[in-house]
Image (tube, rainbow, N blue to C red):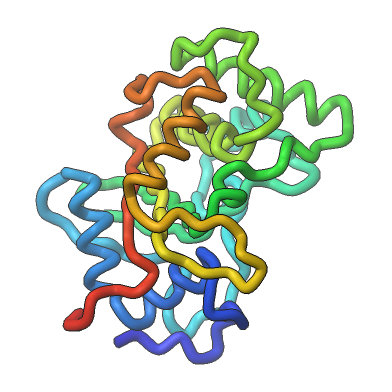
Length: 234
């Protein structure tokens, strides 16, 4: 069992952040096995970069988990606004034996998947975001009339960052952790099964104009876990 004493942990026993930390602390083998099974890369083990026991740090944002060379840095500064709030990652890990990074997003309720629309205010920033989303859509065969800056914007910008990382040669997989069976005091709608999550994910894909299988699909993984891990993990 890991000890996360000293880390800034969720102060409420529900929500995706709580369940992610709970698995990392109490059921790490189950979490790691579920992610590794989804990757289908054979042998290897997950090395967590965030969150890890005994370390207090904020979430990684944008590409802050990487050491970019000057050429990659210049490309990143052209691809995404460097002011404002960059996309943040619930967790970051890597499988060194396979030479890949894992960018992890956790969800426990329906509104988390929908997300808020793009919040950029400056016209220059909006132009950059719109251009990069349009580039990503074109690479995935999505018609330009599908609007990615509205509902499901968070999901869309994660696809854009994955697209960019491929362009600059950084082997990366995007992992969505979907927790089933959560309960919020205000009765926030929470899927109670993987089947319920899959319906919502399909709706997300339809809204964004995505086929269920597209060019980035091999590097995107949906992992479904109950909010309470089965007993017996070590």
